[in-house]
Length: 511
Image 1 (cartoon, one colour):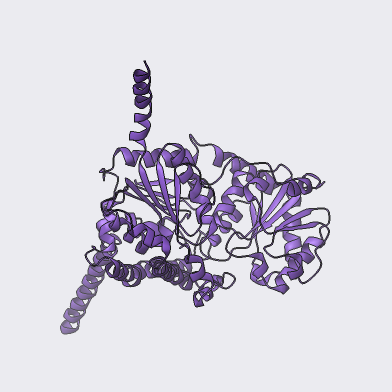
Image 2 (cartoon, rainbow, N blue to C red):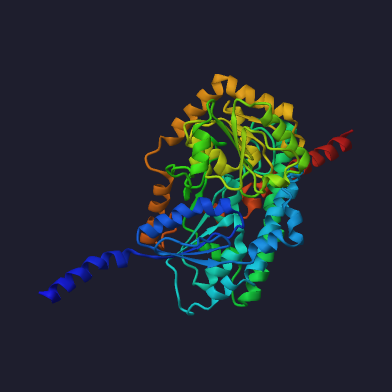
């Protein structure tokens, strides 16, 4: 009967309805690359039937089914159209690791203060008072401040911090990770993995500085803003007790090897998808390149059109000197802004489908800012690299690739055309670069499941076991002075000094 058919239809939809969770995702960093990395996970969860609410300064105009965006509409303006813009001079950041570390903390507080003034935040605050999310995920490079506001507002649901970053030590306040100062360079420190004594001393100082800044600046400032909005809220660190897992954009095959906590899930390359057909203009150009093409892109933050006329001229001179190759340059302004005529073998476009170009069989070389996503996509597709690192993890990314013989490194700040020409010729005329990167690509791809599938499985594991804290290490509850045994070291040093002093006194009396 019709009644029975309706009943069967209702039963069919019940499992999907029951299994579908309400997930809140904070993708707050005003950088398209952060959203690019996280978007496949958000959309993948939506495809699984979960309702995903995304809070972000980057939104999709036509989001897929089950994905809803709440726009933090003022974050980009606050960072790029105010006095805060000066802290984001990407071509000068390489000069001081301490400046980078301080900027990263200050950046999160500036964004948090802007975020609570946004229409998006007001929209979230207007949700019914007892509204709950089954899971909260946040790009932890956005800092603890805004994340804590959302956690407290929605009853502190199970929490998975995520980051399109590969430096595990940055997760120390969240899950108790360690900084291995003797063997792993700080993510802001431009030095090779095999450090000498003085480099290890500096590295230890930068690691310690980063830890102390969290205690004396980042968390107190975050607590003050949290109390300003919610006077009865606990400390930010107390809210982090709901952390279940942490997703980080790393893979030990393609970066420095760091021991990790049991609740860290490596999902390096999660953003890499099957290549799509190229736009008609690009497809025509790359297919007609007889000797292949070279892709040049500085990513989504450091725009090529802000390089300045001198650097741009040197790059164009280098490209013109290699007419046998087609260059594809992601350049964000039109040709009228260039200091010289564009050579015939150079194609300029404001936006590039980077992953699709890197997967094209005719590509020969990738010239990049050495950002993590770009580096991973080049390795995945077996494309040799010339890196222009600018700040933060970009140093370690390119340094590691150089050590494996799959890349060369230049400094864009002091770039000369002859240096770029020599580097391009060296890579394209030396077979080992191509052979090494193809071998590394093979190893990177050889995984039991894709990074995205791994991430989705573990998200649903938390949804199935929301109260489980079994994977959370005890180190997260130990003060860093105890964790790194500084109290024990101080006791030993003091004891040795005291014993030596007593011996000295005894000997002097005997004499």
